[in-house]
Amino acid sequence: MEKYKQLGIEERSLIQTQLTLGFKPSWIAESLVRSVSTTTRELSRNGWERPAVKCGRGRPPNWFRYSFRCIQS
Image (cartoon, rainbow, N blue to C red; front, side, top):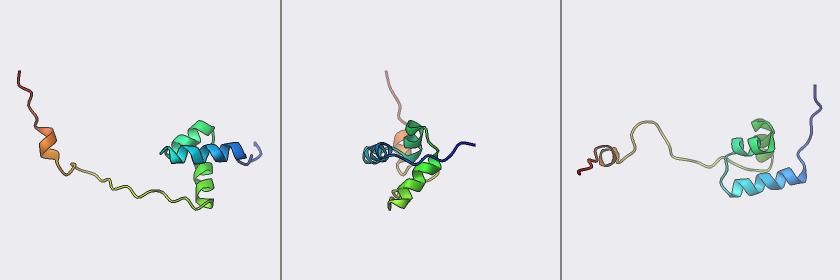
């Protein structure tokens, strides 16, 4: 079993940079070759909160306008 290795200052600054660019924590973890839980734990320790995103299932509000477009030649 491998011993736990703490995040270095370079990794922490990379996390901060990628967050400001809009990357998801899972993408950041993949780029660091770390576990997703490691990055989300680090973010929660520093007061980061997941942004509230309004997304849901089903059709978008203007579904009729987008789904029945005809292209005439």
